[in-house]
Length: 405
Image (cartoon, rainbow, N blue to C red; front, side, top):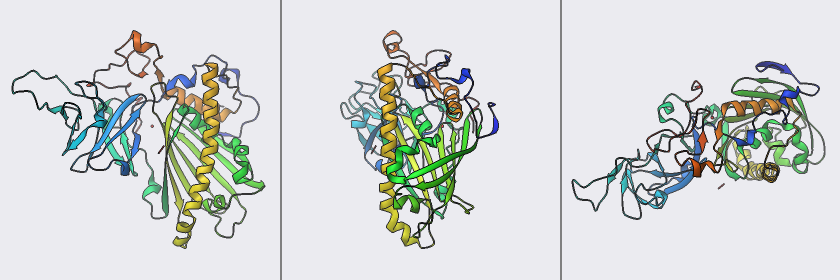
């Protein structure tokens, strides 16, 4: 298999240099590249006058919506006594700390210290402010180099705005490294896990393509027996009749996001489309928050989808619960062993691991916080990232391409 280009469904064992025991850096110790837009909350949860506490890779972030309706994101600590600003009060476009009432503008600068007289000494700067954008019903922040935010595009999710589709939004915490989630969605050979809800499915890898930041796989799915949840058929566009069909599923990791399209037999467009991203919450990135947009094609009779909606939600939640059980078990094994002992043999997954490894950043070891207090969670190959709130918390983007509740 070459690093780029299209290949047919592979046969045989991959080369030894791709083996998990070949000496490649442990992917579970690689952090996500912060120089992309990442969702950290649903827009509807950031209501006027309310402050929401969230996080990205160990960086605590306070979100609030000002009087203008704009959402602001600040480092979740008061520069005075380090009390979380998420405990504070929104006043107009400012956020006031609940303790000594220091007030911050949306960019993190201090706007007022009420008990200081004019001319008294003041801190030279406030706290870090993050670039923020709202799209697809989500609040995105740019945790990396703020200068790169303006030249880095939000992910494209065209079906979200299409009148042909209705969107179901997911927001769930999963206790595993984000890479396990990428592997889970891309490797459809795990359908045995879901046999209780989808029956016996036979996934045939038709081929895949790899690139520096992408991996795309195409599968042919055939239902070969067993009891299939009725909602699975509705989701796949089979309609009320529940006809059996063979579906083509295309799954793509375009770092750091993932998409999945399912096209039923004899159809010329997807019955549903999924966009997903896995946002690390803790500094060691062993817990992530999965955000998903499932866009389902509207049937000829719109009321049919309205009736089926809760059943489709229940079905997808059950499938997700089974996936979560598996990936969290993988993480526990990694924790117990202290290293990745996977013996992966599927070239497609070896390919996505390489994409995640080469586009990610090195995680700082846990004990580095004591030895190098100026470092924060993500460390580029060139060294430590300054913890100064006025600087970036990540490496420059690689060519700036263009990443529960």
